[in-house]
Image (cartoon, rainbow, N blue to C red; front, side, top):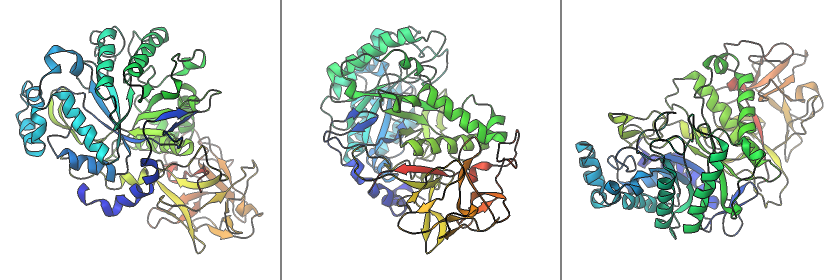
Length: 538
């Protein structure tokens, strides 16, 4: 399926997001939320787009016209792009005035020059920053916001502890050079409504990292951006590859424009033990989620909360890594539960030059290698609910629940007493009291509640909401299994039938008779994961 022909499948989701996109500039923050000038919440549902590699140009400009790429980003349902760049593009004399053609030529990228000449001929004669702005402006025409990300100093693939780009004072990370770059790009985009934010630095890391130096320079960087461009959000990253901000519990980030501050965090499965995801999936999801909350996620629920933007998370979209697939389902459940801002890694289907390889495929990319089709046509479905706003800080409506299935990305619906998983463009509304002994999951607007019919049978909607068949409680350490008992006192869990999207009850996977996690399980319990996501939308 070609992306330019995807409007029939993706456009309805985009239309559902239209309220979010029609915000009034500039953006600021209120408590844990990003808001527009009128005080309405704006949820950042973004995709990364690399522009920080050797040639210092946004990837894909050799593959497709930027107007087509921008239109496709919008049609995928993203309202924002995290566009990366390298400091040296702005600060090294040999780079600041060269054109796109000259930058590509110095790496002997003849195929890329030909590709840009075919697809975006006007970009060849532009300076690098002007070519970047051309992408920003085309995205803006499709109501796609941009957050500029200072990814590296030296334009290379990121990241490693010893690549010279990890922390202040590293070989290619001169703080003065970095501050100059932030100041230059902030000034360049002053008044440009397409750029709503600027992030200070991607994935600080390495043996030199420490919180004292972090405070010193990150506060200077934040103030440098704000002085030159007070309209943009200032996005602040943490330590340890952007996974740790826990030092903020003891010492606040001290600037005088806190209504522009957003913090960012990354969440991947890199470094996680494969056997934990494969054989202790429930327990490990709970542990990893707890670690994320303890190190970064606490910011949204602190006494003085701030917005937290998960600016990188993602997985190989070919689905070949089962451990990674389970991590991704776990992360999706958390993002949906907290209605948090995010940016998927990544858009690019390939890179012009990466680590010595030409036209290198990016298997995490939404685009395929040629930037024509989706890499995985079913992948956008998994992002349906997290693309939507489910919590509105100024809402006058009471909270209710959406019953979400993060593995499929679908939401649970009822139609004529049939219970099934369907698109999250709309959803059935549920109430649930969360009693520890089990509580009914009631369909609002009716007298019915979910009811166990039997093992392997579809759940039903029953008016008897006091029987054991209708008393549900979260079990397993993940908390995502919802179990009730059949007529013989056997506990059964909600389950998703992928063949016809009906919701069944089955034996709870990877749980013992006491509904506790077993030490080792070869089954995949994520098909039985359901999350009651609270919302106060009308």
